Length: 259
Image 1 (tube, one colour):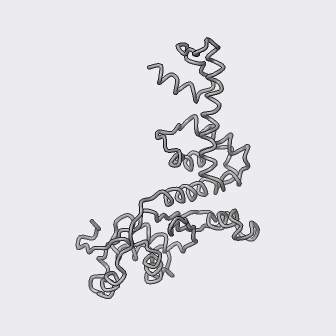
Image 2 (cartoon, rainbow, N blue to C red; image 1 turned 90 degrees about the vertical axis):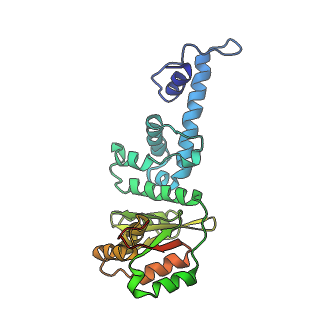
């Protein structure tokens, strides 16, 4: 292992000593300088996670969050210098973090906040021409074979917990009391301009959008959605997607799978 590799490993492992080959420019003890640097690196990475997952921090408190985040940082250091993208593995880590087991919805809240980050940084894309799509939708014999490409900023979370209500409560959009956090909810994350929105949607809408994202044609996606939610309304869901600019391309498929 090179000195650089030993340095990187020791930064995130408090049990390891300062690499023996390190020297300070003025002859002072390098171990003291290394300890300060180690603390600064850990703190900055925890701060990055706190900035990305503010509601998770609010739910558990700052002290608990920073202790939990420190464990994650040591186990999963960043692989990129772009800290805005750091934390992709944090929701899965929380799900397996035993001290957080009393808050079973915490991992899904982290997933929702991660979707918001991804939506904010997703590429721009223009909406499909609405008149062309309207013409295609008005052709009943072919409508089931329509394939949609959705905006890269669009995200869906199908949760067993009340993530939308919890999110809204921590944005002062609704009171914290009055809902069951263990009630299943589905979230749609979308970007309008530079604003990222979190909306509550029906289970059928969530299944429908996920199916379209997975490359299934409209007919199959609608069948899956109706199997999940008998009250699913494809026209209403499509109207929302079109109105929000979430559909960016469409084409026809004859093989049961979109290109």
